[in-house]
Each structure stands twice: as structure tokens, then as C-alpha cells.
Length: 189
Image 1 (spheres, rainbow, N blue to C red):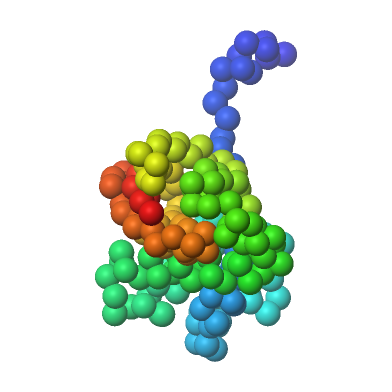
Image 2: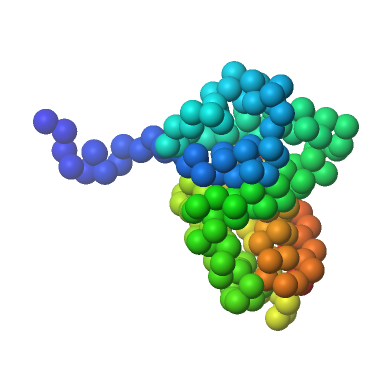
């Protein structure tokens, strides 16, 4: 029999995030409105827009986003392509059943609260594992550290831009830092 102290010291294997089908629908069905070539390619990567599963492993999400980047915006730089995909995600997600619920409050709560609710929005999108750090930089800016190793910072920046635009401001979201552990954004409005 193992001692309780030994069990407490055994490192736990981190579970990989699972992304809800509403997020896939938001980007790949409502945001991008895929043509038959993209739809077939997404299906080959594990996501069938015509027959969605309840949720998907984050690895399927990453492969599908990278595929969409190449097929839809292959002529753009990575930074520009992923920012557009992030924008398409939020635009499309707000047209899903789950996304409409979150989007209705954006114009009423204002930009500061939109940014403060970022951890909640990320959890809705299958990422409750992220411990987001928000640091005020005056009244109209926040420095946000996100320990996300699965999404590009420009992708999250683009998604956040649309959410803030729905709060009736013109945001400037820049990537300040990136590493193998995540990234830091500066969000101004």
C-alpha cells in the first residue's frame, strides 16, 4: 500500500483542454463560411461541420486553425492571418446560441469590464485552465498575460478586438511579449 504522502508528491498529468463545438461552429461555419475545399480539409483534420461532436481535443482545434490560416489567408503574414482568424472567431461565435448570450452584454458593460471578463470568455471557449493576469495601465488600458501555449497571441488579439468594438470603442491590441509559456498583450481603448 502506498503512503498518502507519496501520492501527494506524485506529479499529476495535465489534461489537455477540450474545445466546445460552438467554438468550432463560430470560426469555421459562421465566421469563415467554408467552401467545400476547406470543409473537406477540416473533416480530414477531425472536424466535420455537418456532423459536429460535443467537443474536440485542443490538438484538433490547433490543426484546424492552422489549416484555415493556410487555405483562407495563405498570402498574408502569420501575424495578419491569425489576427483575422481571431476576429472571424468572435464575429462568428456571437452568432452561435452560446455566443449570443455573452455578446448581448458587451455594449452595456463597457470596455474595462469586457477585458476583466476575459477569463470567463476563455472558459466559455473551452479554456478554464488559463490563469489570466490583468494589470491596469491607466484608465483606458490593460496589460494581459495569458499562459496559452495552444493559440497564437495575434489570434487572441483579433478576437479581443471584436469584443471591444462591440463595447463601442476602437481598441488597439498589441503583442508585447511571447514565449513558450504564453504571451502578453497590451490592450488600449
